[in-house]
Length: 121
Length: 210
Image (tube, rainbow over all chains, first blue to last red):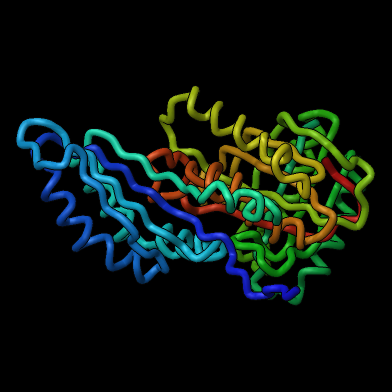
């Protein structure tokens, strides 16, 4: 029997859910990728998935945009948090998003199988 | 309990023990119920070089002591002071006999004009941290009556740990902190209500002061 001492720390996820103002969805997605995503990647985030609901661009109603990012572990989460939380350009970006959105959520998650290890600190 | 906390940044940190001795002696003459005056530990952030914390039985004692302390903190040797005066808020103690541990205080400033119901929720969730993070042995969350320093500090979040590893490890790394509580602080989260400027200060303690 062998043991694996190189088991990776549990990955964590940051999820942005943005309900765009009517007609703004496509432009907001484009700006997110152009203005926010490069800096987020520099802060250690990996963009895993983008979802658009409904799967068509609405002119008179809201599209919901969902971005799922991954981070290597909780330590990487804090690194992202310290850098992004002290960057005025990041704050300005979110202020702009909030002006173009009906609502917005950011939440953090993991796979259920990783919960026990994440809580064992 | 009427409390007073001062986080003192010195022009020349080498003078920290001399000032600590002066403050310590002054607090004795003012019948402080509890006092903790100690150099801050590495890892403090805007936490000063010296953490000075006092508890009194009544507001008048605290006020008299504050007036006597002020000249000591107004000399050229002192570069800046962040501080609060407050009455003990809700808290708990799972280890009231804790000795030779670490005391940590966080001064924070909730934005003006925030819905009081949201502030209540922030406070309730914060007070729940010890339930999920047992490394927090004793704790207290209070609203500031008076504030001085870089912000109009609104809250004082105090905790005690068996050692600094409890603060740097379980407190920081538990998901209840970073994936739940921190959204009140994170400028990237729409729920943020706390100013990004914080005073995070901790020091060694001989016995619990909470």
